[in-house]
Image (cartoon, rainbow, N blue to C red):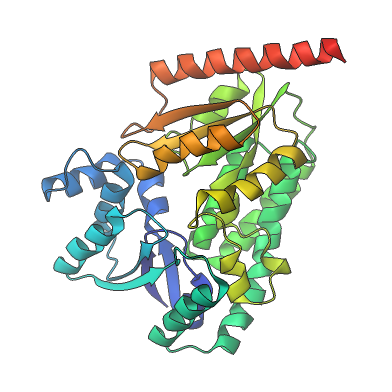
Length: 336
């Protein structure tokens, strides 16, 4: 099967039905032991320093890993993607644009997915067969999520890792399923994790994955990873078809639609606080204004750039925030 790169999560069901192996360029970039080389490639080719690191990392990962075709999301994702795919086309990469319509009307979502299916010459019936097969794998990632927030056995990082990997199933669906089954068996045999604070992580997946271990050392655990969970399509089994599945996907649509799901998860997971991660030079950082206004929960906004580890200033801010949450929780306990 030919590889096809992704700039973000798209209807992979269509690509797999067409005989492709989807490869999430974000995952290649961030999991590399030498991730900075991808950024350097982009900056040497003229990408400015004042541009989102993820865009530069995707560019370098695409060129360095023999990816000849990509799907670039031009609506419902970073506006810089439009320029990114223009440059990639200059480098000889074949680009297939895809849009999550800003209108978020069901008929518009259906229209875009039908266009996508026509481009890859697959039928709705073929796509639905793939979708139902993928739902079996997605059920396993959902189980890891439940082992995190219900049974308190999976760590926040494990929750992050296996859900974010569902964007492309690590490029090998069968191997990914085997890995998930093995991990689930191991997690079930553990004793529950007992930490005082239950945190939510919202925003794009982090450059600084050490945040999960850092908060654990401060008596807290992430029991919710918003966007990563959306990448794993936890509600796909309830969707009647692929159109409904991608209509119900919160990440590419407006903040108001996203907030409905956030409120539900805050209540269901009994969250004490939320870390909102944003990337430097990303327009999504502005959403922090809306989120703090609409969500009745303490929110700390932290920003990442090129580093893949937390800097000293961010660590201090996290420590102060978690201390505040502990005080609030103890005060509520005393009142009750």
